[in-house]
Length: 157
Image (cartoon, helix red, strand yellow):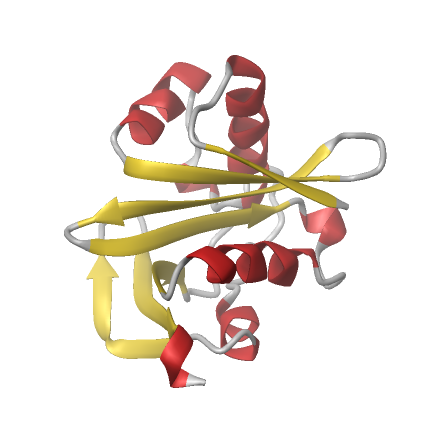
């Protein structure tokens, strides 16, 4: 596996993100088109994108760090066929080399469904294993989903 980083995305990379996003996140977060995803991607400030590829040069994971209100936030998606093999940790570790603090939102519900009909498994336990603090009192409650804030800080270890 290899990780490549970029500040700017080409159409090919956006299509990989689109596929991962729509296959792995809950159905209510799906984008109808790459153009709709581009609106989200164009709205984030100072992004760094991380692409995880296998030996066949197929993208199996994507992560991004970006600025929001003076803090560094992140998003990460791993193809579910590659869950439990250390690849999510590999992407997190790469981001942790660059950033001293990472903020994120994690869906913690148990009833979310992916586009293929499978249940979406909350990655909350994954983040706990990777030294993130779960800030249970800070939640983002939206009509489509509910999330809890997570934070990792270099000096908390």
